Amino acid sequence: MPLTLSICIVNWNTRELLRACLQSLYRYPPSESFEVIVVDNASSDGSATMVCAEFPQVVLIANAHNLGYARGNNQAIQRAQGEFILLLNPDTEVFESTLDRAVAFLRAHPEAGAIGAKQLFPDGRVQASVRGFPTPKNLLFEVLGLARLLPNSRLLGGYRMRWFRYDTVAEVDQPMATFLMTRRAVIEQVGLMDEAFPLFFNDVDWCYRVKQAGWRIYFVPEVCILHHGGASTRQVRLSAVRESHRALEAFYRKHYREQLNPLLYALCIGAIRLGGVLRVAYARLHGSR
Image (tube, rainbow, N blue to C red):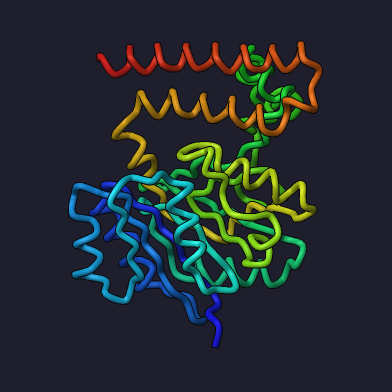
């Protein structure tokens, strides 16, 4: 019989968090058939050895080199057998009924191409995990600081969505791919993650393509997880900041270059580069304290 759910985890040097994640999956498994696939991107902390020793039921793909987040997810998706596919970060833990509720929502909403979950910090605070697409309007309002000046404005704050309420089901653009559940049918239609975005904006690009194909994406607060946050990228913070802005610029080249007036396009690229310079400077200053 075909599997109901494939859980795909890409790991890099987060052994202890990965252990807790896997423990939670087997403590609170879905009520239907499932598999767990871990792609380890050449971790140096013994992550792959731990998975083999403690979770022999997990399908482990141990890469000899770090192939990036997008490629790792694609490896797992290509190996997956489930009707539904969950992309899950290793620094998360699920709760009782998390997985069943996610599957049930997708079954009850055939128009839904993907869903995101409510994410809680270890101290119980709700994590901001939903954003709009970085459209020219959203991007420029953010860079100009107008979104921070009026954080409750839906017009000015459409990118970071600081006004978003995390207690109601809502159609959204891009829930954080820390927990992103989709259907095999969606992946077959829109394709895998674009590996031109190895670390950042691969999920944004994929959600953009899903919405362009006519599917809806939902934030579902009844589907709840614990998220420790940034465990892999924290290890390479400065290079991660640079890469996020490089990826945003690549996103604009892919999706907006042919759509926008050349002057507006150049303005957006300039704003992205300026934002990158400022964030790198801030990261250096903050890191030196």
